[in-house]
Length: 338
Picture 1: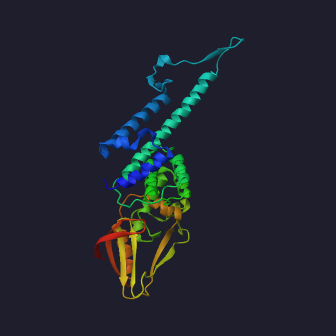
Picture 2: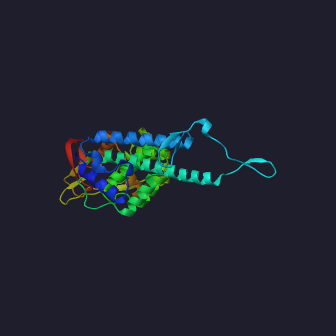
Picture 3: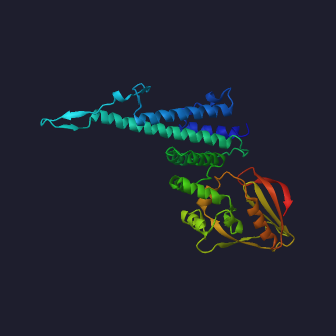
């Protein structure tokens, strides 16, 4: 398996932090069984457990002291009554029953959180299993993991669970990639906001969203951008944008590049004094971290429009496929002149 070492790194972290009780021990569960079969079994088990929790909430099942489940029919339900000295019949609280119910409620909540957490872990496995990034030497910070776990376990939406899984997978690949502020940001966004952010993420490159007509063509208009500015993932919208300047990386000639997802724009020219200029909105630190969670390729038309703008300023432009191999480095393939 390509990402086996990354998976082992994640499982080591989870075991150290005492997480994953529903789908551990990891090594025993995985001996002699294909990864896809393991994941299917784990998800089926978690789904059944979630159904049992819902049945307990609805009163159609109850948990016995030995933790076994039994079905409850309508005739088994009753209301506790108290007859006072004045012969009035009033409903009252049976404190023993109430205490037991509170304990049951807390137990159900804990089980649901454990289900949520284990689903996220399964999604994180899927993120890592085919990843070619080298395994880092550093480990995930325990305080970071505690904050991640406390936030992630409360999420029931599968789409948001996958978002938290990407955060964990990203932190396994490169500890320190996601700040505590970013975890707090993700905790507070809605599913709708997450979808809007994902839409904009496709057009963020090298810490900027370049102002091109292509944005309006895909529905990213001024109102949309203002909302993203208010959320705090980009800045400069209210001021009409900023100017981004791109000088050369080497002396004696002009050379530089822009990388976005699976594509790269490569700029070159004989004149080292060229300074490329682009209008853009800046992506905030939180925005940069959030945008990295998107799972999509680059918009070719958007990249080509940026490349043509660079070409009009006196540089040669190539567009190529890009594969990230480490946090800072990667390789390009199949370059084509623009």
